[in-house]
Image 1 (cartoon, rainbow, N blue to C red):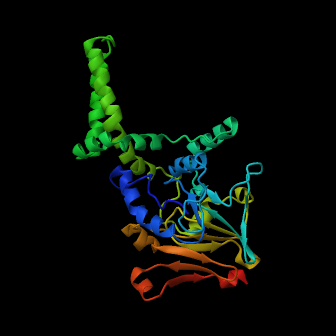
Image 2: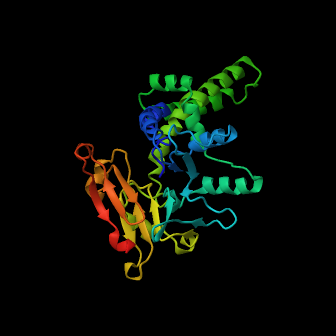
Image 3: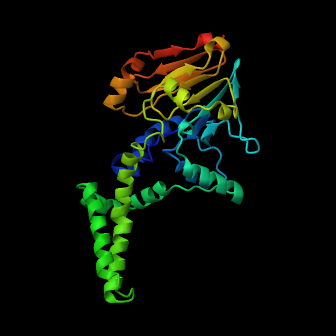
Length: 323
């Protein structure tokens, strides 16, 4: 369901940590004889680049088993371009649509612009300024500089402001081709390519999460998300009885108008460390997943100690919904 790879806000802004965390899990899954369907979310959109590379090289099945590894952007099944609808996949008596969940965010200007240009140019265009800075921040030289100067990012910001002011007053009348002008260009380039990307990537999540009314806050329960952000008009574009999503890191479920057998929304939760606030205020739990077959639907929790005993905790049995 996406956000399995935290490329948007990796530890110490270093994407190498993400690679190390996920390699073991993917290597185990890739030996199995079933399809792996990965729905790319907003934190791991860089996988779109991998998808394009695989497509160019004609790679369709990268498993060592008999199954295939497939990546879908934002939703599964794939959105029909001509209608913009998602046709749910039928399992048993119900149809299911799977979304990452950031579709419930209001602030999606870069996504909308990317989608507009993609349609106009008939090719996949992605506009993501934060990702550009993250790529710069993950260049080996930039990372080494960042580690040596990683005392306080606030100091970096102050240095940039002071440097900008000093540069303006000292070099505003200096010809670019002069020795002083060239020195100013070299120093500016150093800041832009090393310190500035580290500042942007660090402050990105700090600023983003404080923007009121733009994103769905982490650990918000399903009922709140749907009541505040789900729009029936947009919901008409999803042809499914049950909508499964993630993104908010809080497993749960909510059914609109249960007396009329209304649409069911299920959040699969997350596999990342939850904050104390999420656990205490929202009663969020981690390591949860959804099991679906033709006759059953369960929201389950994986616990390593219990799993060793052959036990998996059932959070919710949706049998009454399927009947």
